[in-house]
Length: 192
Image 1 (tube, one colour):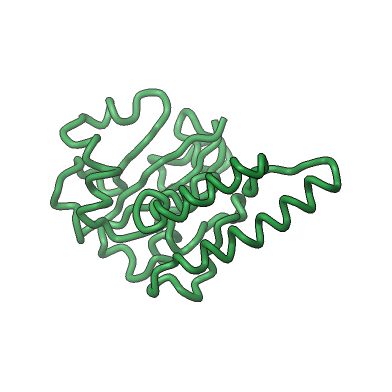
Image 2 (tube, helix red, strand yellow; image 1 turned 135 degrees about the horizontal axis):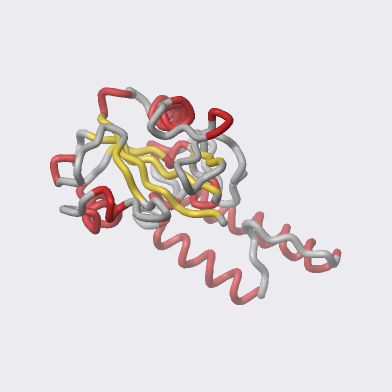
């Protein structure tokens, strides 16, 4: 089963989004507190993981891409075709899917903020690349904090990480508003 995991780490560990994704990936792979048999991230519940994965773009979908994601969902529903992660056996449906995918990608590209332009962001993503996409690691903003991290405020790690992890901080800090502008927030997909 694939699960979503949010990971935070201090901003000092990385200067760029790529470095942040790499830092989280390497820490989960090599840090003794996260390593299981075979040298892979496998806390007691995971046998492998990737940055982003099936949740690649989640930080964007809940912020700047909210409107375009809603429009995409409406178009998919109207056509009765899913574009990302769906494969159809019959040729006609596959052709309709390809046409819709081109329309959706054009729509998505128009919605991308300037700071993400020419960074390789697409709506339909490769979910198996180890390091995800540019928007799978971001500096925590007030908006991101309120959406993704605030629910974990004041919780002891044992409650955050009971059987299936949902969130953890690589520096061992409890979730606090001081994370804003001082921490990276990275999305991971882990398999258990």
